[in-house]
Structure formats: structure tokens, C-alpha cells
Image: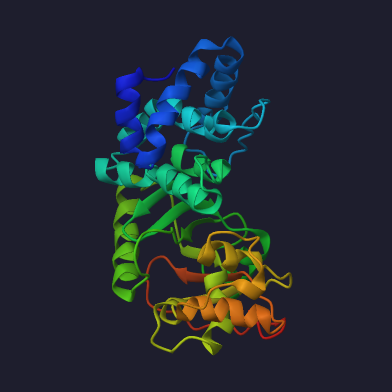
Amino acid sequence: MLPDTDELAEVLLDLGVPHEDVNDVVRMARRVTDDPELRQVLQRSVGELVRGMGDVGGPVDLPDLDWPSGALQRCFPVYVFVAALPATRAYHREHGIPADVTRRTLADLGRNMALHRRRYGRAGVQAPRWLVHHFRGELYQLGRLQFERARLGQRTGTRLAAAGLDVGPDSRCLNLHIPDFCGPLSPAAVDRSLALAREFFALHFPQERYRAVTCHSWLLDPQLRKYLPGDSNIVRFQERFGVAREDREPADTEPVQFVFGDPELPVESLPRRTAVERAVGDHLRAGGHWYIGHGWLPFDSFDAVDPIAPTNPVDGSA
């Protein structure tokens, strides 16, 4: 189920796997293919991953590798995604997905491994269950942003319907994600990605009706406006969205993880090198909390929407 040694190295490079991890991942592949128990776990994992390929929100329960802690356990998801790659690429071809979109989308595996190395200083996959969306044809990288085929939840669907959008709970939507290591979140880059998304989904998924783009991110917490200038990329990104719903539970580790690379870093020692670093750390050191913001904008027109005022603000958050 895995390519031979020479081909595997090339596949890993195509998937953006960090160069310093390639040799070790290739070397350990022999342990997977030579061990009957590991081969069986690999086969079950790939079967679960590709079952119902392309279904939105289908349950995928990848088995955990019951193996002593170590490099093989940390990297085992790489072999699952590599073995599933032919099925993923076949699904993309069936839908006419351009090869460059396929390559950039699936290279999120390498980005995920880079995040793991940044946090732990060793090879591994940071969030393998997140990558399931990429390898099942649910998520695509289009320019600076990623767009995931999804459905509205009960609260968001109800809120958007009240705002006059022709949607409701369980309506199709696109979840927007902001990947790391992709340069600044400039207005021009965001405009380009949104335009690409309109063209991409109309062409490759014409049977699916989308009316809304949603985003669920700490970057949409309006408290950031107290710390950042009005013309900053983050504030201008926020201004595109209306409020879909509000969270009352703090999510302080989210900005710490995405800004500094490790959600467990002590707050008192967080660096203050950039405006965003100062905003995140100073707010926490002052006793404040950060919250996940939930925003939306219409898919048919990517002009900014009139914000919906939060109904239950918590400590000034959305």
C-alpha cells in the first residue's frame, strides 16, 4: 500500500514534508510494511479514511496506533495519508480539480509537520484528524485561504436566516480557514482567495448550492481592535464579516498556540516582538480572556456585510 523507497521520498516532498524529516520517514516505512500488525492497522486506517470519499461531515474514526511512544507512532499518520493518496487524487480528477490546487491542498501535511517540529523540536504530525478533511476531498487551498465544504449548525443557520439569507440549519456552507506559513493576511490576498473560491466551487461542485462563507477563529475576536491599528490586516479581515454567534467560554490557548506555536507557554514570558504578540500576551497578562469569533459573509457577493451586534458580550468579546 506504500510506494517503494525511492518513490516514497518523492511523494513526501510533493506533500511538503519538511526536508529534515524525509529520511527518517522513509527509513521507518520498512517497519510498517514488514510488520503484519502495523500493515493491518494501516489497511484499516486507509479503508476508514477513503470510505465515503467526498461526503461532507461523514464520521471518520481512524484507529489509534497501539504502539510504544516514539517517532514511528508520531509519524504513522504520514503513512496513512500517503497510502490514501491515490484515492484522493482520483477523486480530485473526477471533479476536474487542477493539479496545482491538489498539490497545494495536500501540502498541508507538510505544514502540519512543520508546526509539530516548531512546538516539539522533532518529527511528527500535529493534528492528523484535521488533515482528514484534505484527503477526503472536503477542503481546498485556494490562494491564501482554505475553504471546507460543510453545513451550517443549528445556531449559525438560525442566525443567518434571521439576517435574511436564504439558508437554515444544515444548509451547505463553506468554512474558511487561515493556514500558517502562507504570508500576510493582506486584503488583496483575501480578495483573491474569495474570488477563486466563487469560481472554483461553481465549476467543480456545480450541484452544491452555497449561500454563505463562515469563519470560526480567534482572529475574529473584536477585542483585537483595542490593540491593533484600524488599517491592520486583522482588523480589515474582521470588517468583512457579520457576527454569526457568540462564545461565552474563553479560548485563551488558541491565540497562544497560533501566534507562538505552543499553547502551554507561560503567559508571563510570552514575547512582545510584534503588534499581534503584544496584543495577545498583554491582554492575558492584564487578566483578560480571548474568545473564538464566529463570522459569516454571503457567498454570492463578497462585499462586507453589516455586522450583527453581539447579544451576549462577555468581557467585551464577540
